[in-house]
Length: 287
Length: 323
Image (cartoon, rainbow over all chains, first blue to last red):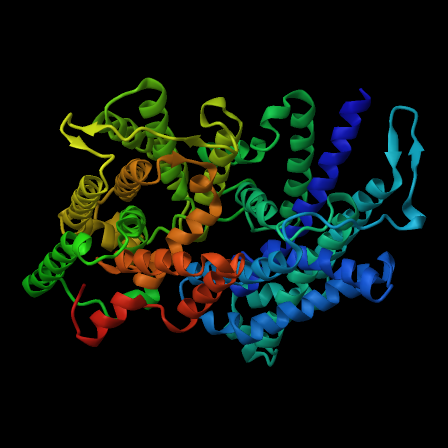
């Protein structure tokens, strides 16, 4: 049973990353009509940002948790201003191709300087060690990642569904022209939205740095799984993305325990099943 | 890919077909002359396999509006099937090619049924996820030999006559295979089937309202594309004499997209030119390690932002022809 709980925890952690990343993808898609293929690369940049802060400037984990998402978010906003904004009016697929190109550039540059092996990033002192819960041993850092991700996801949900800014955002998703007519600066909102989505990815990167090591390709394979998560959950609802992300992580964890051979593929197999039964995705609207 | 591509489409006419025939004749003559020019034939053969794959991919995106981000799965599947049949079962080359192509066709039927249930951006994500699923399957099943791949594949005698171990013979066999595949696609594009596909690309709802069962057309296009992509993969086995995980990886799918984008989406000859450009680039820049990836990324960005018609598309636009 120990092993089962351990795999469940791993599943929840992966689920946190799926949730944070698919949430960002959904928010970005809503505003920009772009599937951000660079999301995995930006997630990786978040982790590297934490690594640089620690090793070059001596800035630790807690500050990295704030600085890295902002820094990568700004980088994302620059990308949006310089490259992505020229795509408006073109077919959605061009956005996918452009961001795929950006992902190749970013990952290629990092691979040049850091190879393909992982760089270690230590767990901060405050979160070292573990707790014995009676039925299982809980490493504190892993518990922290799950709880913190959940809080961030819910905050994002609150921001978009319950605040005035979120209302503008949702309105601009529905009808940007009308929202502009009300005197709201939609292009700026688009840039900020991209920054927000990218910041969430970078945050996930910082969280994963102590667990998964910091590697140039850490986001490349993850983003494909997240795409499958997005197809399963649909991009219509924020809460849907969060729940689907965590649920698929847990299912993956359970698979690791009961049938480890299929743990890499279970999310994709589920995607196939969902497409056969309910093609529009579990919560999604058809696009 | 509607908005940007259709504004300069020249209507299909007798002149268009004639232009394309002339271009086809030029291409054929050039390919036949290659061995006498001193160009490394291995490079041309490799490029031709990718050119056929890119043409098959282009059939979906250029004429059906479906961006497949997993076309490497057909290349890799056919490669593994052919390689296994040739090496372990010891079949003749023609049977090996048939088995590989049939494997890819079967895969195309299964994945097609799943993938065509969604359009646009979702179609791209689904095909990518399906190819990743297949990648993990091939990583784990014993017959593919995991990271090592299947190596040292015997080339044998095609139809019992043509010794494929001789570079000259192999070259002309590959050229013949490529031209055959190319003509199948060319025929499909210019058939009533191709016209319906284009109408689906332009306006699927309208095509449905006119009574076309668009899902069936899309599925058929997907199967045709996957099968021909598999044919390219089976031919590639004889050139590279191995089958490995690289051919199923998503980076390979990305390269196929890049080749077609550089050459010109929705043009007949663009994917061929694009494949030669990208393969040549990889050859010359092989010493630069990961910078090749960076350069590919830059090409993606530049093409999408400023060069959406691609090489052949720009030429065709300049001469107001369709190529």
